[in-house]
Image (cartoon, rainbow, N blue to C red; front, top):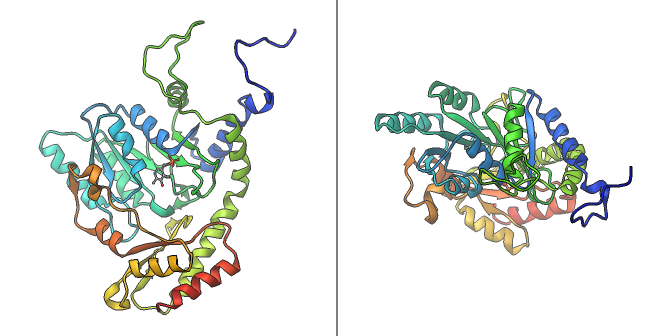
Length: 362
Ligand SMILES: *Cc1c(COP(=O)(O)O)cnc(C)c1O
């Protein structure tokens, strides 16, 4: 038969436009995560959070318990659904959702007759959350657990990959993440049925018909096949990137080894394996005599980028009216914490510049 004449094709690069790359990239991710997960490649981690909420049945006025210490993209989709984020403090060891504050929030909400619809836990900076405890609480109260592993591809808890513990997981391949497709993300789900539903929603929710027919609102969230091709290449270097970032962590451990008042963020026990996406430190200004802001400005003067930790969501102007459970751990981390250069392309020269700049203050 002759080649098919299409209605409207701008297709000069047939190979790129077939769906092969997407399918193969998804298979690679499924293989990496194990646990028989189904992956849907999307155009961002944010869309993955959004679809996870829709598939969890989160609707208007539903309560979603969110980790306060995170990037806003873990929370914004809750508002896209007109649901209500309620923020939970961090614990001091892994800096992620505090199981005690989470349980307190659930008990309190239940006592008011409000049943939270979902929990979004985050593995910040690649550090696994206290996932065993969080899973147990979600299970006990029968609340859907969504795991934002956007920063944690390659991290694991007791050998199980981050992103595979919850009912849904989220990955991101944005430019700054551990691997990148320049922009992209993925939804991790459990069943083929969920995967089919996610793809349906991500491709404009088109019903089965010769014409365009819709009985639901859809989204344009699917990953482009071209970018999935880049993702396939990136999967080949994931392990390398993780070891590089972990070496940067070792570099900072060494650099601050004998410095009182500065602690390098690290795994609280051997059960946790962090990809150390970003290396972070806490500065106790009472001991060091300088604040994290002073160090940040010193580095900036020497043309080196660093950044305070994520400002907690419950302190963000846009979420100022939301409820919050916990004490001031996330806030204290924000005040004392600094993320240091951690990229997978840093050279010995870069490392010398970083250590010389920091040593000016020590
Ligand atoms: C990057 C990131 C996201 C969003 O991913 P995008 O691909 O940029 O949309 C969500 N949550 C966290 C914690 C992130 O760091």
